[in-house]
Length: 327
Image 1: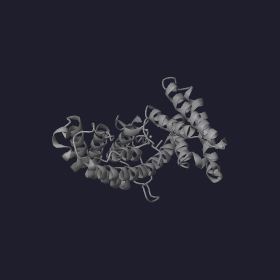
Image 2: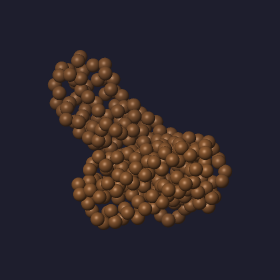
Image 3: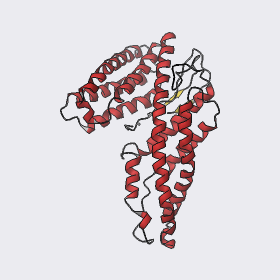
Image 4: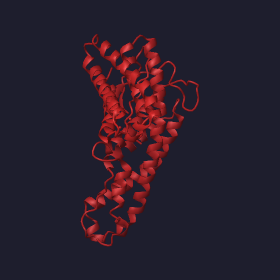
């Protein structure tokens, strides 16, 4: 799974109900004031619509913040949690027989795990799930494992940083190793499931948001939301550079690329009349244009490069961050 950030919820009505700002998508996301739809995003798992409430929006944004905190843990210099866990396991600490041999490397980031767990704690405490029942269940599973994993991770961190292993011949390290590995392995699985539910929720929100914005004649914001919808749908078609040699996938991608190009051009055009926010919208359009460039490079190459593929995901993630800075 590509490491993708998600945007925070920006449901829209003609009246702003609360000036909340929160974070939520590679697999890597950004920040915005929250508004509330008169009727909510499509309920997960069926075609009915469900009333959106401020509480359920807060829950969604807390979960987005938690998910993005985990992705931020590994963004840039690593290949994600599975790779880091494999590196940790390669040290074979379960069979280490003494305190000698140098300081072990934990690899998994306790600070970012703490940020994610605290955001999850806020989300699960909110009773109203609104249309996010499946996301709520996935997030609660992640929290149920993540909370004790955080305590164990802190214990492991203190054990290593204090060099206690020099005194106990690494006895406590061997004791912690198996539950540490098992906890992170389950956390990785639960995080992926939560990402799947966030994708469903985010897409439903984008569709509902676009319709509401168009109805309210807020065309610049609607065009910006459309760029996120089409770019998300586009990158979801491809899991690896080699997928660009699959003509059926590029055939599905080309209409989305055309829609993305059209909505990006609309953002450019309408942003000229919004002097206070023109640079923010133009930055969003810049990222989308660059994403399209990477897509076309990948599609036209006989050997699509990992660099272009990673750059395409990166431009999407930058666009998500930028979208959270829009009014």
